[in-house]
Length: 519
Image 1 (tube, rainbow, N blue to C red):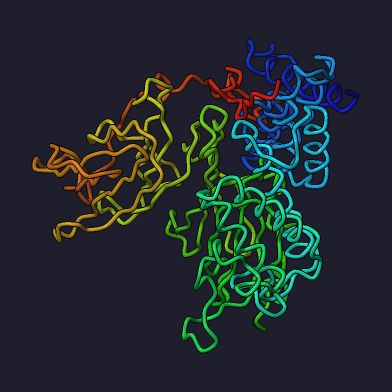
Image 2 (image 1 turned 180 degrees about the vertical axis):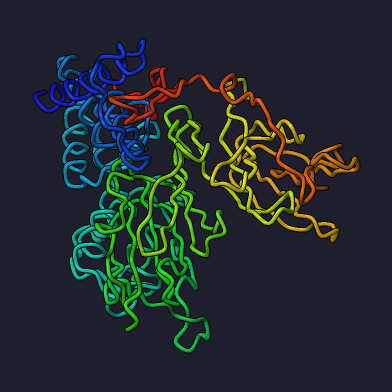
């Protein structure tokens, strides 16, 4: 409870600062705070959003530690009786997802004892408990072997030689639990596959797997020509533990060698810049990169947007998080010396929408790269709208949003975008892949990007482009509708240090993932 109060106090203080910044301007005679850089403003913005998310963790399925703490508070308030069994099951699930595997196993075992769940039989309505306990055991083996004692082929299929688990407790427990599950549910093919993997982890595949559960040919034969790839990250200085994220590989400091820029999905996970040392290894230059406080990122897309010869990076945030993913992306301008600055505010790219994908292309053929950003909108299913953006490069380091102006009105759950010349007319066409299906569009009227629907195809949209703006024509002056379609104001905290949404995060309907009839 002390930790929860501390978090709430911090967020309250930050919220007050943001609220003050959103109010009327201070009198002219008031002492003005020094103006901070765009990088500092973005760092403050991300810190505020992260702190706010922790106070409402039930809206973000990946804040497992904070969600577990909230569930513990709920269980204590409910008195710990049978009415808390479902919540305790949920708690065990969050602990497991948060990496607290032994705690999750202990919670499940205690819950099953308190709920008088028999251990020698598995009723169908209780199967979820046994499933979670089995995968927790297998996960324990992965943590103790893959992370605790890493090797070049550790935990990479087919788990041969040094890849086998030296600490066998987790895998052995998983073998026992999956064998029991298959005894009562012989058609559970997921458990069958994981049983084979557990046996493989301890060197028992295929000989020790019961014949009725054996899945043949999971491992290549001795002289199989399929190539083997060893994990050398630890040997070359690239071993970073984190969540899934973005990866950009290019020459970021102009020395002719390929460098590595990586992000992690966690809202407080720092970005990492690794520069090649010329000897086959990498040096972590994150601390000197100028990106302190630039955190998170589910994907990255790099390009030289300002034509200065240096590779810049766009960091995308909020993908898969729904309304809890209303984070800004970051445009990181490369200074050319191995350092970056976040120019999102000054470039005109600031937007609070969940995003996972974007693509650069010079769609108006003026020699400067423009940017399409795909957002994850729930509008087709009646949820909040997050229309995709097409940013026209103004050739001065800034962008103008022109999607509606040129006929692109994509308001869907976009997961992938790419530019390419589909019809060989020398102009970049846009392919948009969406989660729920879309349509093929092609231009047949000069001056627009999208004129008519040609055909329906599953889960994707193609937009063919006849350039809306020809080379040599000045970019149009537009009044965009970006403010009206986003329920946010560009507010600042302490002399424009941060920009945060005005509206609070709300948990999605049905956010609770587990409901088991344990009473």
